[in-house]
Image (cartoon, rainbow, N blue to C red; front, side, top):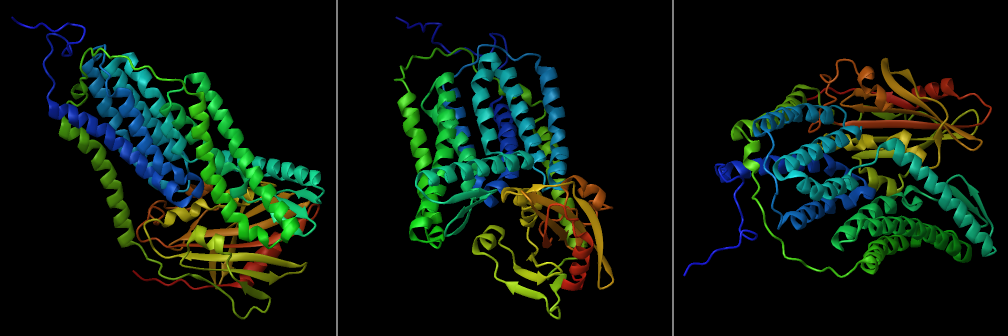
Length: 527
């Protein structure tokens, strides 16, 4: 007696008359997709490593692959590939865009836009491959993991700055109101709270932007892991956003309350401890919220249909891989060529003028030093016609990761401290020891206070415009002058700040004159 399997549970090949796909080709097609995702992870890794608010990004790829596995472990397609010959040609043409996108990413390491472009490219290519091999049902399953990975991408600087400033002002205003209820004097002043015992500053870390960015990832991940429906996921997201804001409000309130009770020095003592406790508490609250919203999952038997046929995506396996890999290797090889053929800066070209009697060096704050990790650097103050000014000078020795330091930029860092641009940046040239050096002039405002900041950045002695939008025009011969360099490029940043009041003219002439007196310039040429 023979046993006949029911057709509802018997896996079928893709098309009764279709030829079986070679396993090696199907594996290679999957390998191409995975390589694209690892390329995206590589492009994002610098942000995860250097910006504490994006450090959670290291967990996103792991969760992404877990979600993909959970959604597709028992999935079988219910449709055959559409137009396989045309599809694989489109797939190959899209792979040709990989070298161009890598060129764009390397050309402007300061901008965050290339990372988003790469993400949309990889996500669209993955979505298309999913739809063409698995049909509409497969694409619907893939949408959430593809969308979820976007939580690991850095926000555009303009959006992040605006959100940070808005949250700072909201936290400052709310904290001052709570302190009034406790009968403490508290006057909000931009990103500062004036207490009877001194001033407390609401920094970027206390604004809530870090908790907000990480919280969005927590909420989406827990909604998926606990299999919440769409409405409950939205509810969990709003709950997490509220919890992130309230946790940072609690942090600032407790610090200000303790400052009033125990003295202003307690703020530095408790700052990190309270921050760590609240940072660890947020994901726990999200897990509890997701568990509360979840319903018991009733497991149902899955009926497999037709098998996947990824192999048809790759008409020429070796060539398809080489198209993408060769482009990436070419640009990185070109970078190494530029590195080894260009002048290598081994020490700072700028030096403070020791003969200037108005100059006073001061230690760099520990938090600033740990965030920037320079090879050498100093803070300083200097006398001027009206009061004093302050500045800094940092140098990073040649290293492959040096381009990341340019992410710490006046247009984002000053805004994070509560200042906003009063007008568009302008450019000036200052002669130091007979050599023209290029600088950017920023004018910031905060209430009635104004600040002129003259800022300059150089890579291997080549000026990099302070305004990212003008990097290309400010560096003629780009990229041949070495702005692509990474492994053997030094970075040097110099800045001076000149406070003045609303209604006064920005002291641009004074700023350029003081820069000339504060610094000496000696450019060494060594390989």
